[in-house]
Length: 296
Image (tube, rainbow, N blue to C red; front, side, top):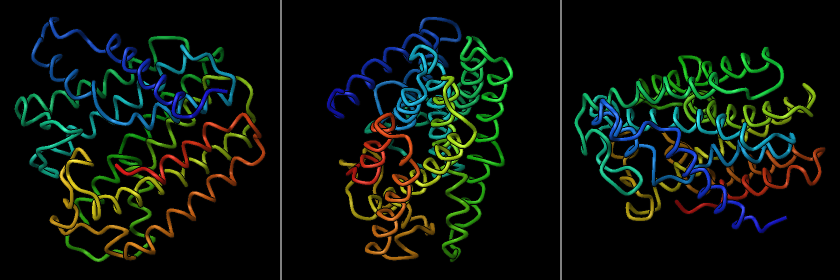
């Protein structure tokens, strides 16, 4: 088995090429919209969600060409959410992945349309190609991403986030928000990757989903810590933005020390969820380590 960093780098490089081919070319009308879509998706980000999909696909014995489409669908939803989140009506940010945000580089109307178009393209990715031998399972995959993206998932979490500015939440309320805003799409990435294979039972999917819940929450806790402790150059986005906007975070609620302790506990719980998978879950274990120990 290749070294983990070699595995990550190879998948990131290969997946970038997948995205370049799946996104509409910038010289196809409407050119400005397509150029902005490519600007917002390509050449940036850790690709954590696709990596989780590929790791789960490996565990389930999935054909990687099928997982490519599932991973792309999730990443396009994630990219659209970032474009919209950065707009003046949301978080009003000017920096994302080390470069100007979409509405700054282009304009607000184009950024709005970029998000709309990326969301539509994501569902095209899940319906254009055979991802599993069972059509009912593929339909389930479409529904899974729809729920994870909508008012009962990511969009609902963002609405809760916007409504929480300036308010004091307790841990359960903050967890509810982030299970939806951040965690839903991470869980979807893992399950979609696994659904491209044919070897797992319902009980196994439940274990993977619990792993996804834990790493999704851990991802957000670490994000909150980094937002408070890292600098803008390291993060590639504006540091300290949550505090400046008076948003509740795990750091403001628990303090940095206890927030880091919470991330470590979620990390261990995630690893425990994979205990019965043996060596097949090695990449998922390493990704849990990567998510909790990252510096940006």
